[in-house]
Amino acid sequence: MNLRFSMRAPLARRAVFLSVNILAAACVYFLVVDPVRRWMEGRAEDIAGRRMTLSRYEAVSAQERAVQDFAKQVADSNARGELIAGATSGIVNANLQARLKSLAEAAKVTVRSIQMLPIKTLRGAALVGAKLEVVAPVEPLHRLARALEGEPPLLLVTAATLRGQPAFWGPVAAKSAPEEQNIDAQFEVYGGALSKETP
Image 1: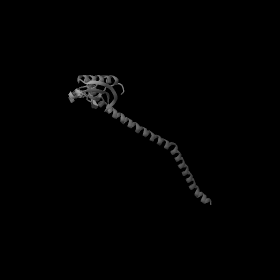
Image 2: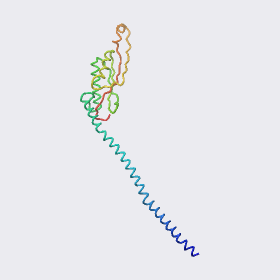
Image 3: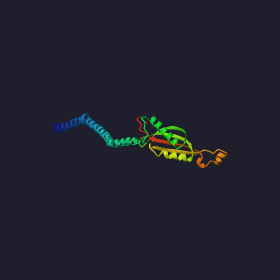
Image 4: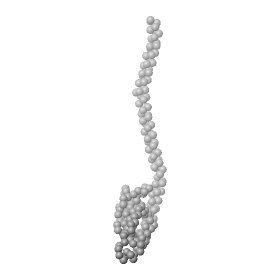
């Protein structure tokens, strides 16, 4: 029996030694290695996020030359009078309304009203608009429509509505030609704005 115990003693000692080493290795892993591994994974995710942010910033900085070229192009266009000038959208709108009134007077059209429209954005450009309501025969209206989109500053007619006025009864209506009958017209006109305030 003593012989059996003595033979089992080295096996038991080996088993205890192995168990203690496995337990110590597990403790070292869970207390030191695993937290360090998790910290490293977290840092790797932070680094990946920062790399994505850096790549976005590099893409923006790569566009700097294109933005400067576009700003120069806009400044050149404004120097030639292609855009309506003004420090604020209110001033630009007042300039637009004055331009519309002068075009209508030059075309010999009666202006009923000019109303401000909400600012629109088209391809990054702020467009200030006005609704022009006029009354005139066909030929002056045609001259006005050509003048609106013809000369600088750049004006865009986004909508136009024409309505014939009913002819009055009597000898005047019978003698007047269709070209001389008045037409109610509404034009929604937008112009480019170099505004310093946010639209």
